[in-house]
Amino acid sequence: MSTQSPENFDLIIIGGGPAGYVAAIRAAQLGMKTACVEMRKTYGGTCLNVGCIPSKALLESSEHFHVARNKLAKHGVVISEVKLDLPTMMKRKDAVVRQLTNGIAGLLKKNQVVAINGKGRLTGLQEDRKLVEVTAPDGSRRALSAPRILLATGSEPASLPFLPFDGQTVISSTEALALGQVPQHLVVIGAGVIGLELGSVWLRLGAKVTVIEYLDRVLPPVDRQAGAEIHKALIKQGMEFKLAHKCLGARKENGHLVVEAEELATQAKIALECDVVLVATGRKPYTEGLGLDAVGLAPDKAGRIATDAHYQTQVPGIFAIGDLIAGPMLAHKAEEEGIAAVELMAGQAGHVNYEAIPNVVYTWPELASVGLTEEEAQAKGAEYKVGTFPFMANGRAKTMEETEGLVKVIADARTDRVLGVHIVGPRASDLIPEAVAVMEFGGSAEDIARTCHAHPTLSETVKEAALAVHKRAIHM
Ligand code: NAI
Image (cartoon, rainbow, N blue to C red; front, top):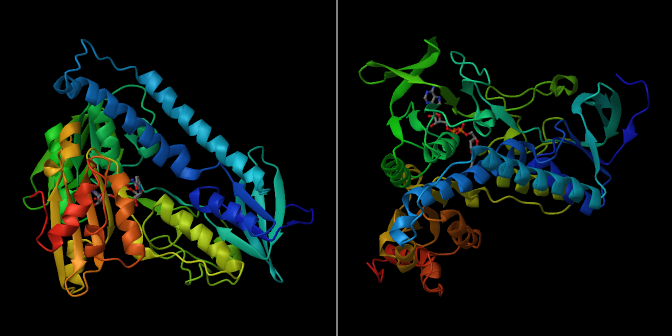
């Protein structure tokens, strides 16, 4: 513990990811003297450094490669030889990450947030102040104190006990974003969002990709029909699936890795020879070395920290947001919580509408959804109507040669209020905000159906699916 008297702040935020840095900027806007402590050299957390941004950069680049090799000829664009330059692809990804993380550092500075590089640890409570010690990368220590602490330390990949990460052949998403060469055979454990996104990247770049998934479906939390569309599209692209299989582990054999799995129904064993295994079976909150015990806090069995509706933990003045607390581990959910938490601290009416948080899977086609899945609507005993509309019947999708997928609108059968929207299709991520906004305003399928949508656009599928709720789609 440092012997110097602590530097005082109004608010200390531990963690500079989308939850922490956004909260820091908002807190500074609200006039709080704010410190944001981050142990990485750069701000932006998992999302900007080793998550959303680098994966989307590679998804974009690999899709260009795939399009050049497989789709352009149909448009009458003939390229004699398409070659992969993986180092350039990786360099571009790194440059995008660098620009964006530098941008965050600039934003913190502009807002006069005190950015402190080091690992923050709670060290105790002193009257109404909470004490934090920051250990810098060079080992030096700095003592801070504030009446309010916001914990935003995010999450880390969860490993499988029988298949621990070695960073070379058994890897997490972090290493899968920086492979030096295209694997011949990549085995992915877990058909969740990370498995399917990063599996897609390496599949497009030429790897054989096999996904082992415990459940009998891909992307388990998403609407079953929407998930099935993605499954179908990825099979068509050449991804192989071993659904309803339990991974048993891996062994080294003749310089190769052999992954073993067992079919749940029959106990039939399979052995897959591969060069790399990506374990993508979920993430867990990151609280290691955070000093929760020093203030009387403990994570629950899932590693999450319990909070009240104002994001306050059981210790008054200590708050938590983002992947550390309940709810989906999504950057935009974490950002919203960061803003709401500090607005509530400032006596404002911060609020997050958990019913209207979009979820996007950046495969191709993309999957974007908001609200209840059909299975959730059934489980709630809701009386609902469904309208669907395929991209095959959309003019713009035809012109793009991108006709896979559909839009599905679920509306309350009595009030017509939109309960959920699920889009599988080209740039679904750019189509979902309309549905989110309608749900935010408590709108109905009729509201979407009577809204003029530009022609010819992909967005007309959303209007048509809303019309289909009342069995009056025009182009189907
Ligand atoms: P996930 O929870 O989305 O999927 C994990 C999958 O692994 C599940 O389908 C599960 O059934 C399966 N599984 C678990 N144990 C298994 C085993 N032993 N054998 C075979 N299958 C097994 O987790 P994922 O993909 O690792 O992502 C972690 C978090 O990161 C998620 O919460 C996600 O929301 C977030 N994320 C979000 C992205 C986005 O919004 N586009 C992109 C990447 C991550």
